[in-house]
Picture 1 (cartoon, one colour):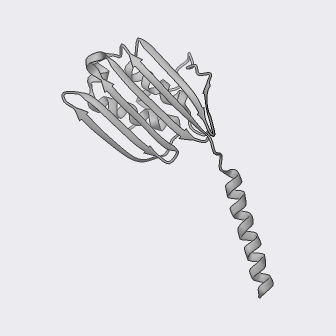
Picture 2 (cartoon, one colour):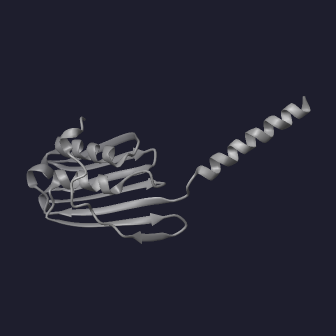
Picture 3 (spheres, one colour):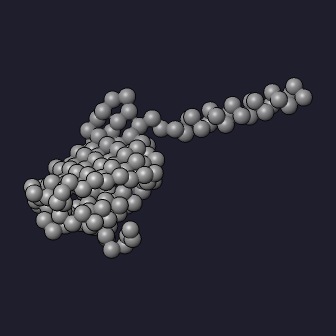
Length: 158
């Protein structure tokens, strides 16, 4: 019986160690400012919520919860709690501007697809985007958006 318990404990501790070694202590943090956005798109609160839902879905992240608040008449803040971390969007329709961020642990999610989906909807004239790799330190990564569309907003259902 003692040998059986010892064997079980060894097997169980091996499983725990294997799970810990699969965990990657790192993340990717995408930040963007979209300027000169399509005024009709950025002023459409329901459309913005749909576009952000689609962008998070396109990134491959897992949504745990979402909250949004409308600042009358049509300013919007949306925050998503993700299994991988978080995403947020803040619109300033009176300036044609939108600020977003997407932080995800590991390297499974795509900031590029998230960005592409929001650009597709907002049609900004100017974009300033940065991607940071985060672990024990913070490093800026090379970031560029694909020239060919990765995403079509029509393929996503709210």
